[in-house]
Length: 90
Image 1: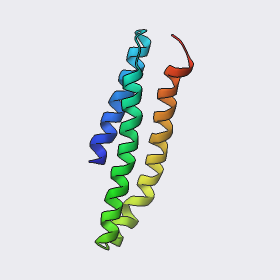
Image 2: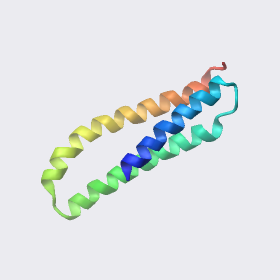
Image 3: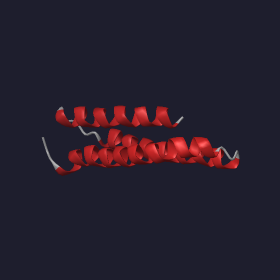
């Protein structure tokens, strides 16, 4: 589920930039992108919690360290891309 939310967040961020470049108001895409980014983090955290409940320590050791770095990067990128349309005017 986290992958679906993540891909939708990326698409919404790109639509945000496209609408902004076309000088249309992209506020709904901005909201959608940031909301889907938050849902991606929640879905990933939920998956990790399920692994803890099942005591699947090998899955946690394999996935969590790598995904943690990627999630940080994606959240920072999402904030940066969506803030461009707030700060600059085309």
